[in-house]
Image (cartoon, rainbow, N blue to C red):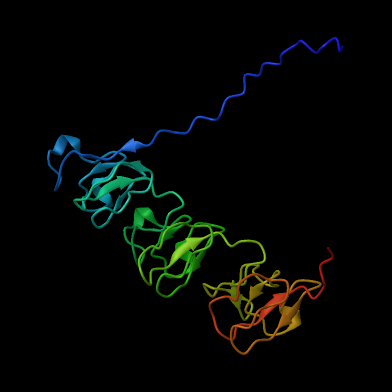
Length: 224
């Protein structure tokens, strides 16, 4: 018999505790009572983002729509403040209000890359096209700032300038970046993939949003 056969091994491992969600709580409406505004997380009824506390947005919804990050259901259609981090949410438009620009990831409505924080791009879309790295549908036709995934086809400039028309080191373009006109527009080892529309680009993900944009790509075949 093994010396250890009668020993029982005890572990202190426990299942990770799930964070308890705040419950929906309707505490006021139309800014009254004033002492309860701005509203906190999962509190309603808000009419706009300004009626919610710092970092929170007003979740506009219809009856029985679940409020992201909150517990409970409300069939009345009351709007509640929520944490929009990583969720498509419109904070402004045309650079207004100025204090909220540049926008960060998953925030809209942007019109160009210059309205997004450094390192982010403005995802131009039609309808409810999904935005990489963000949850939710957002507002139809609104454009949102996003972090470009690796090897994702995206227009970062044209004619030696960035999308804002500024010479800033965007060229030569990197892998899966457009719009190139010739191989010399691409970084060393890359070539310019000429397109007529939105043809797939070798070794790249997605097709971009500008029909006919030409994309720098690596012609090397990846080994498996």
